[in-house]
Every structure is written in C-alpha cells, then in structure tokens.
Length: 483
Image (cartoon, rainbow, N blue to C red; front, side, top):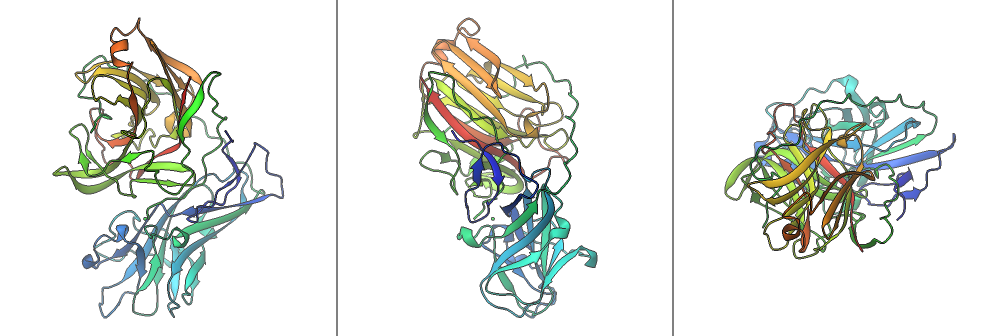
C-alpha cells in the first residue's frame, strides 16, 4: 500500500488528489500549497424567517438596511480547519475564495473572526467587527470566484473563522456554501508557503494521568451498541503512517481508503433518524455529521436539537455499519484514526470501531473504544461481550506516550479460531482465548459485520459546558484481511 505522506497539498473542494511520496525532506527553496474546504458555514442574520442558514446551499451578504428592511443585514461566516502544514512552512499567503453567480457593484470586506459558523445563524443583534479585524476589501463582486487576502490571520495549522460583510448595495448577494451540490464552487481557503520558517517548538506530551482499573461493575448496556455545508470538510491528508501490511499469510479482502468525495454506500449503511436509549444523541445520515474529503472519513458530533425515533435529542451523531453488505468469520480488522478527545474538551464523546454478529445474537468484538473526558481520554479500550447484562471482558490500555487524540493511531484486532489479539500502532496490548473465556467458541465462530460510530453521552458521562462541538472523529482507512 502506498504511503500517506503528503509533500504538496492540493486538496480542496475540487477533490484533487494530493501528490503522495516518500519521506523526503522539503528543500530550502521548496514550496507547497493546500486548499481547505470550509468545515462549517452559515449566514448570520436577525431575520428569523430565513430559517436554518447552516443547511442551505447558499450564503448571503447584505448591509444593515437590506431589501427595505432596516434590520435585514446578512453576514457570511465560515470556519476552516488547517492541518498538515510542515513546521518549516514560512511566508504563508492565504486567500479566502467564494463563488458568486452574478457581477454586482457591491463592496464586500473580509474580517478575521466573527460569530459561530456552525448553526442556523439567527442572532438578536449584529456582531461588532472592529476595523482592526478587517483583512481585505473587494470593491465589486464578479461572477465566479472572488478572493480576499487573509494572510494576516493565518499563522499555521489551526482553526480560523472569517466573516464577509457587505458594505454597499442594499440587496442580497448570494454565494455558494459548503452545502452546494457542485463541489467545484464551494468555499475554500488556499494557502501557499515556502520552507523558510523556523522549526516549530516541540510539544511535550500531556503528563500521564492515573486511569481507573478495568471495570468490574456492571454498567448499562454498552454505549456504542445498538442494532437494527454539500457538507464536506476538505482537510489535508493525515500525516504519514508506516505502510500497514498485514503479517505474512494475511491477504487483503475488503477495505475503504476514503479516497472519494462521499461515503461509499456500496460498502456502508449510514443510519438516520435513530434514537437509542443508551446515549444522548440522534444518529443521522446528514452530510453535516458524516462526510468524506481529503482522504478521510469524518464522523462529526454536533450540539444541536434533533427529533428522532419520536424523541427530542440535543446532539446529532454518526453511525455506519456493513450489515447486508460485508461480513466476516475471522480476519484481521484494522482502522487508522484520530480521536477528537483531549483532557479538557471531550466529556461525553465516545468514538468506536467494533464488530457484531449477523444473527444479532450473543457476541461482540470491540477493536477499540475511545471514550473522552479527563478520566478516560488517555486510554483505548479493548473488549469482548457475550451479552449486555453485561457479561464481558475488557481492558483500558493507557498510552505509554501521548494519547489517542494526539494524532492518527492504528488499531487492529486479529480474530482466529480460538483466539483474539489486539494491537495499537503495531504493538500487541491484549489477548483473549478459550482459556480466558469459557464462552469463546459460542460467541466467536460465526459471521460478524463492521460498525463505526461516534456517540454522544452514555454511562461514562454526558457532555457538559466544557465539551467542544463540533467534534470530529477522523478515519484514514478501514481494512480487513483474512488467511
């Protein structure tokens, strides 16, 4: 399998593939670029009749008095996540690009910062944007892409919010949003750089916190269990991992590299409008919650009201499975992924990669569960279940250095007759067999399907005011080998 090291990024809403190479260093006169799609956008306004602007295929701008309404203003607000820039990147030049459909004599300014870009956008008053935050001004709008130089706000990898404010022409100008069906015209942030910058200071790992021992008390049923803006965020390809070749004797039989522009529904089912009594979120098939871009699958949790299964929920979340599309009896199951969870931002967040039997009966194999919160974020859980009373065996494995949310890590389970082995980044961390598990053969000798989900809330705790949304569980690939 090719490496996933990206030397030059050309990743945007156009979906152009990145140039992939080895681990050669950039030379002093090398340059690079990356084009990042908006991770969130909305139209901020006091006009409640506009509805949910975060779900529309267009954004709008308009001055304070707009279409004869003295409080009819609209501001376009966009958020971008920049990742993958090398530590040596210097002389950054960033351009915010939005597509309009008509030539218009409207003066539009770009500001750094602004209100939240994720949500319906309706507010009680127009945000104050100081002149010092103004980055660039365009004296007229042209049909096609319009560009603003926002270099003064972009310092490197990080999350950036921009606001477009229309100063003249008292009628609305419309722009393509991240929800637009035409990927080629969605908003983008284009960054060019050279290799002249100083190396970034190293970041020491977060000191290890004591983790509770594996639970022996019976919790409620496993919180990742349960059977039976378009909204892509384009980010740079994840840092390169060692090529994940299975041990000798294994052959690749199924995989998803997430190299397209949408979830592959020939491989996956995407659950929608499903509420379960084991968590606080609503499983939704909205592209706001599940999308493919830049070589990554993103499962996003949002703090937003939703109705599903006749229940009112305060969060939306993502759940994929392969029921009816792919199942396996024995194999090597692997995911490379980055958890969203850190020490102070992740209470109540719970991504997982796991297997359930096709017959819906006894048995479950958790390749990995990654609960968040200060007590749990440093560890990855490996587990098997007989049932959800619960009869189970599990452990929480604390990373010797770092934690699951500090970058991309590889999680693997090898399932063979009479034995299960778990690995993290190639190191074996857990094992179960007939000797440790009397019910092993009854549970683990039949076809299983794959589950990939990101739930909010459950028996390890619900979100609180410190939990940061949107929260993204990013998956580089899922692969299955068999002997």
